[in-house]
Length: 328
Image (cartoon, rainbow, N blue to C red):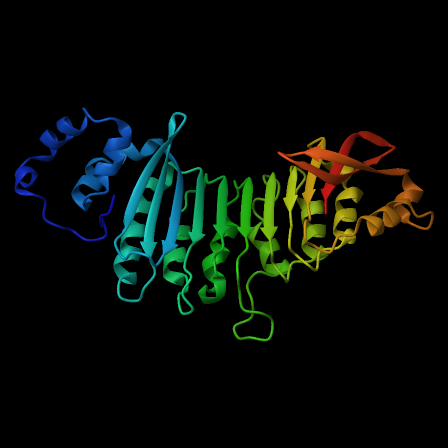
């Protein structure tokens, strides 16, 4: 469904003369999913049907270049709705697209539980505009529990744009998946570093249960050490493709295993720098502080996740009820 609520457009003669009260009576006979789509026709209908957005719990924003006409899709997920919005990032239409996102976020924002931003731009000169991401984050509700960035090139984003995440103290899931950025020898310096990502999660550290930061070349054991010591509710950590992450990062979670709320922590490190033999040596060496405090067991297991996959189960003799499952 393609339309633009960022601009006021005249309605057809069939509805332009109808009062808001009459339109509301007509819309009342539509199912919720249809009312949400109708609301995205123009600003008048958007504000008239704003209460219909209370059932929209998830918003997916797709940034693309295949079409400069915004499109919308609504999917039913149980009793809730997921709204998918596709907008372009070209210079010619950026202002109107940002206006659309602002109007949409103001109406749908208060009921949202999760937001996903997906970068589908493939052109060599196509970049995610800072204004788009800034508008999305500026109108995020304080009750947001999940925020995801997928394939987003953050090269054009200002630090203060992403820094708005630091004010969200109710996040339980943060995903930064395969996001490209400038590297260390460029100006301005890269955003996705251990220090910056750690600050983004500082307010929600005691709420976070899942953190997925993948294919980020500047993420290292330093960030994992911070997560291990400040995020006791984590049960999933995914740093796949982060080459600077080593066995030392896993050891940080071993050191705090007794403080973890979940009985099992799943640690995904596929394509990272975690080597199973190095991990076993750190935990079981007689010269290691870890082995001197209590005996550690490193057991190779096969996990069925649609296909068999090798993993290592780590547990401490003094705390047998809690374990760490490492995929590397």
